[in-house]
Amino acid sequence: MVTFLAQRNSETIPLIGMACTAAMLTTALYLIFVWAPNELTMGVVQRIFYFHVPSAFTAFLAFTVGGIASVQYLRRRENRYDSLSVACNEVGLVFTVVNLLTGMLWAKPVWGVYWAWDARLTTMLLLALIYGGYLILRSSIDDANRRAICCAVVSIFGMVDIPIVYMANRWWRTQHPQPVMFDSAGGLDFNMRVVLYCTFVAMCALLWVMVRSRSRLEDLRRESDALRREIYAR
Amino acid sequence: MEENLKWLWYAFGTAWILHVLYLGSLSIRTKKLQQQLQNLKALIEENDRKT
Image: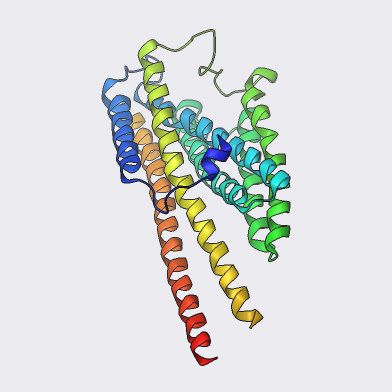
């Protein structure tokens, strides 16, 4: 899958792909605001959950693909894997920030506070900080090969935090609600589950569009650096 | 109910604004780099012509 994602047949994102993504996001919004039933105790504010949870899983997916691309880069030293890795990690960070902010805006009316230092929230914040550090590191190293190697190592290290975030509310007693996605206990209504999975698919499509655009940007930057080196060498 | 609705709109607004801002920043960065690339290529061609 990583090799497939690293291969880009065309320069621009296919129009049909963007149209499908827009259609999926519109459908997800319809399902969230119109089709999904109202939760009895929390009321309408529970609908934040349909954006909050898929954002986290989309971020996990992006960081995992970014981590695997980094492993591939270290094995093969092909620039396309480095481009895919930086694209996935940057876009993953956007989804992580969305997850953290929507979580805070859900927590205020439900818990009475924006933030609680419990294991799930803290490990998620740590994940955002690791990938924020990754981007700072990336912008601070001038040598392209050294930058790619150092960033690949950080990306692989960051991937280790994903299972810790996922398992945090199973391993420790937390204020965060218990897991409902991929959970055999099935604490979620069928209609709610449908909306949740549809939103997750729509977000994965959005992730694909963003990763393609960001990878292309990285390729352009590489091309620009090569031309600049050529000018200086003359 | 209305009080909770406010938080729902804040959350969805924040999520969408972040995504749109990121896509916008990608578009601006891509355009800037394309412009830079064109300038660099023009500079190389000019140097080639001189030599």
